Length: 281
Image 1 (cartoon, rainbow, N blue to C red):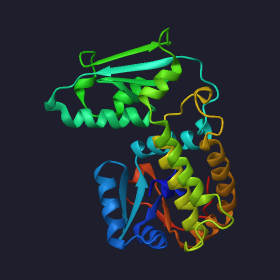
Image 2 (image 1 turned 60 degrees about the horizontal axis):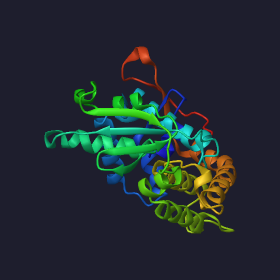
Image 3 (image 1 turned 180 degrees about the vertical axis):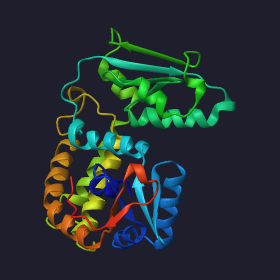
């Protein structure tokens, strides 16, 4: 769903008819019930806003969803999978939260992983480069993290006897990261990827989803401390190549089935109904 929204909704000022989403995801083998459940869950989490026109319901992006999708877009199209510009610094993030804040602790750990941190030792996380810790903390909905009582943040360089390569080895499972990229290549680096998929719209959404999941789990480690044959290099090339291949045919298919409505901020939840010509990223 995030892949679809990022390609066909973000930045357009439109909302999408729920029936169109059901039709799109049927191409991926996703049931109507699962689509409706996902939309309801995303609306409850303030990621989608409902807009009604008669008996039809349209879903548009909230400000929070736009921020999430824009961040994902930067990861995919700008940051990339290979870190060749590391400046030698590390961001250290330590925290200690009581059991009464277990949910906050879980959410914080999830945000740290998304931001590229690895667990170096109990309560101490590390990430290459300078990280926007303020954004990480603001993404966790908890007043307990607003002050400095539970969190310590430092920027540092490795000093002997510690080597940066040691930090990479201790805090990150590079074999698991590499295995995920090799699995991506097994799936997509072929003459005809996913021949059983319904069409190029389905392949586009699956490709972007697979790649986004990889990027989400990749801490963007310094290339100088990774093997020369690091599979992310080839995988990134395959992704960009296939993204261009699927872009135009997928956009034509989406334009034929996706009903959208322009969302006017000054009119509450009554959108301008209509179809729009869609194009991908």
